[in-house]
Image (cartoon, rainbow over all chains, first blue to last red; front, side):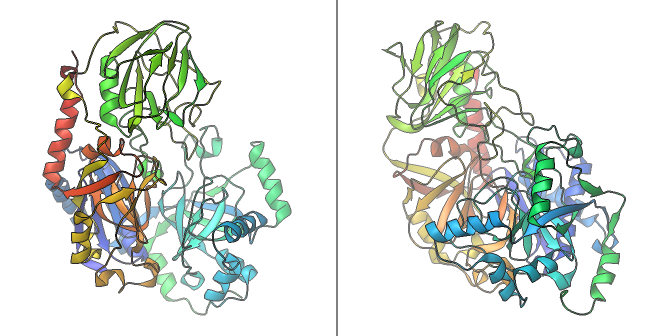
Length: 289
Length: 323
């Protein structure tokens, strides 16, 4: 639900959280991204950092430069100037990302969890069953059949949270409880309606469905594909997964290690919210077979 | 150069306030947990207050200096000695080439700081020398120090031994084992019912041993929720404390199931749990010195009060505090 008026709440003495609504619809994310962009271009003094997410924008501010009440008033002014969400046209790059579904590395991680933390089913088969799909292989086909929208980047450096742009490919999954203590780098996780890509070996709670050999952040700043940036994806980019087998995974992994891997990024497209809405509302049928 | 003879439990290069401006792509600020102690130490040796020094957690390192230096120890008392002779805290000290500065376990408090005139000289990553061990970047090779490391520091100019932090300006690390930590209510306080809110402020919370620079886990009574925590769309997640992912403030008290976790300087930048309360920035120097097993009590302050406390703390971290 979109709130009639955005809600503003302090988080301590340095942060303000704006919430536009309470669901995970794309429209709310567009509002958060729109406000984030407007705030950057406004040059509002005292803004230290922001985190846009599904339906909210967190703003870190320097209280010596701007008061909470003044920041709130400025954000209200910017929101009023945003215009209708459907009119938004967003610069959106498309990254083709190879991924092996039901791969042996996340399988080993799940086995380790079973041994040391708690019994649980094998994630790809479990998520497939929960979503009425045949098996882990079918889950991979459905997951790779849609473009995924980068709602935000964060929790760990460069980690994107993605949701499918084709509603027929929506897959939902509960999170681990208790969470994992480790997840291999490059793992694809599903939690709620989101896919995350673990950019560093880290704890986690999403169901593991596959792994990509391609890094999404660049700690040495030496990778030319990143054009000097430390992370590859930004909120508003799209990802299309390309299912690969083990042999191809290992070949790409070797290219990455030798610095020969060529990222497949398309950056001549823009994303029209209105055109997407028109397309998505006229779709028929269920997920691909 | 400084040769590391013993790394201590987890000693990292940190500055203050850390790596700012990269939160939106997933980098937490990192930096010294006790920014007051690091800043006062730097002032003692003539550095910029936020310059890079060493944060020593629970057990400090042993360091052999290959060149003369002026250093200052602040924060937790780790029983430091220089070639076996006790070194005072809150005071600048001359170290001669070849001498060994040895720290041990913290007697009170949890984190000691070593400031060195002209500062630790490590390359910046995204504009900061703060170590982020989870991602392996910043500081010295992105990790805690270990035996055999050689740490460069610059040439000191004008720093002198014998400067002291005025007695009335030193943070109190008294070992009483109970800390009062100020919070601002929100942003997700409306998920906690009235009884739960009262219980939060009335209870003592034990700092769990599973606490670190990422998060402080607290043991205490069970949480109770409002209807909002149950009547919600499935995409929120199955636990009452699950919500749709949102950005996290550093200091947020993040409710993972029934376990509150204070998000510290190396925390995740966003996630899917509620944050009913947020610890204020001025309380971090106290949190930094709390030891596992010690108890926290929370006190509610307004945003204005929290900002006034921060202003007073920043004023304390000035040359006027050094004599």
